[in-house]
Structures are given as structure tokens and as C-alpha cells.
Length: 193
Image 1: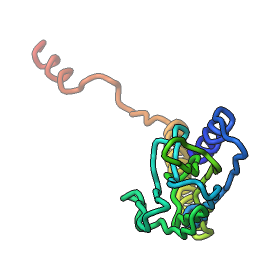
Image 2: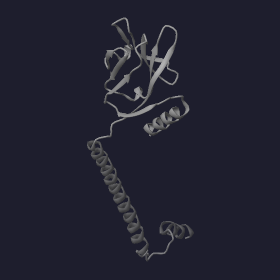
Image 3: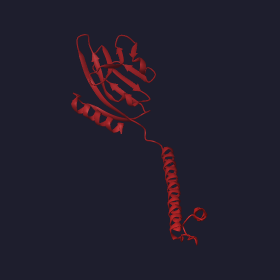
Image 4: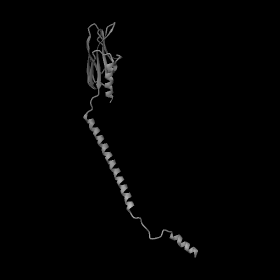
């Protein structure tokens, strides 16, 4: 259910943001994506930003230096192929946290220029058939337990009903003696005499 809300939120963010020439890429968790950023040769710096407000820097490089910076939490998963001003950034092993808009920002000393944007939506992989069979086993166990419990309850109801009906059909035992207490009768007779 959360994947549905994530997709709806992503679409709303896309509609409400100022993406120009935006691309939308749908990927499953665990896959990879290559983001290509190109601009004219006058640009001096390039960074890949994430978020609607471009608040998270994923990658940064300068034309004059051969070094580039990658966000610490993504160093293992990000690789770059740099032939300035064309930069290709590979993000491997995508997770749901990677979902969002990505921006290629080229800078000169005096201004910023956004040349490209991409909206990445990462969905979870479809569950395998093995998990469905375990669900079937659980359902089968619950149904079997319910059937046994129902059979026990039915047996008890029938047994109690049968026991009560037998008792009502038995004739009451009648005694040939009168219903008085003979011991006291005999004593009264002896006292009067």
C-alpha cells in the first residue's frame, strides 16, 4: 500500500514542480540507472542534486580538477564517467530512498544553469511465488483448525442435547411407600401409648 502512496506523491510532486523537459524513469529496487548530464564547454563545475529544492548534493566535479566528490552514504553505489562537460553518473543497487527528482547543475563563477532533470521512481520488486505458497499453507492451517474446532463444538452440542432428551423421556420412579417418614410415625405411636 505504501508503494501506491509513494507513486501518488511522486506524481503530485512532478506536477507541482518546475521541471522543464523532465524525464520520468521507473526502476525496481536493486536495478541501476545512468544519469547523463551535458552542457556547453564554458561551464566550470557540475553537480548532481536531488530533491525538489535541490537540497541534497549527490555528486560534484570541477573542470580544472580531476577529483570529484560523492556523497558519503552513496560512495559505494555511485560511479562517474567524466569527459567534461559530459558527465555520466551511474547509481547502482537502487532503493526506495533513491526516489525523487535529480538535477544536473552546471556552474560558472558567476551563475548557475540547470540543464537537465530526471524524476526517478524506485518500486519494490514483485514478490516471488514461494511467498504465496507459504501464505496458502497458513490459510490452509487456519481453515483446518477452524473445521476441527467447529466439529468439536457440534459434537458437544449434540451430546448435551441427547443427554437432556434422554432424561426427559425416562419415567419418574414411583415408590410404593407413602411419602411420610416412617421412623417418626413409629415413634409417635409409641409415645401416645
